[in-house]
Amino acid sequence: VCSSDLEVMEHWYRLYVLHFGDARSLSELEFRELFYNALSRETKDLLEGHMDRYAIDTIRTGEMLCERNVPFAEIVVSLHLYEESAYEVFPTPPPPLAIYTAFDKLSHIRMILLADAYFRSASASAGARIQVLERQATLLAQEKRSSFHGLVGSSPAMRRLYDRIAAAAGTRGTILIFGESGTGKELVARAIHEC
Image 1: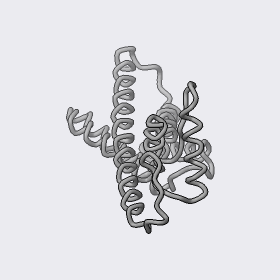
Image 2: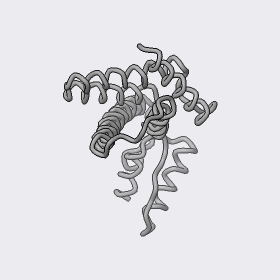
Image 3: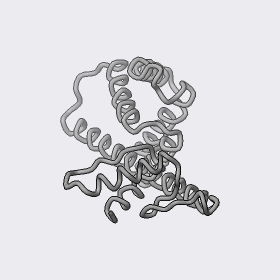
Image 4: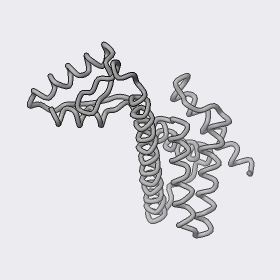
């Protein structure tokens, strides 16, 4: 790693800290491990003309960021901060349009690959959590089990959820279901549809 790379890295991390403050997801070590090492590998892949390896490395980066629960918006902003850091550390005249266009396309490709890997990984993780919850529900004592269109539970919170689902099913408007991954949004949507 040359000193100019380290200078970009340090500037990039400072911008990351300034932008996200205490709400940031990654420590400096994690940031270097995930972002900087990944971009170094991907750049090497590109310079050596290995587009398949570039795609594989970028996909793996998206999966690792998902595993670390880094919000996707933070990933997007962080990559833009990288570009900003590189331009601030190495102020150069604007590149020819063809080179700028090529780098812009690579940036879009990276983002598409990252997004696809990130959201596939998040979906797989949510599916695994739903399966665990379903297995746990089958272990409930029969008298504590309650079912409502595929949802299971008899706590006051679940009863309130059942009431909300029934009320939502009676409307003609658009319904927004939100919550963290693995909390059962798809099950709620299915229950509303069945109602």
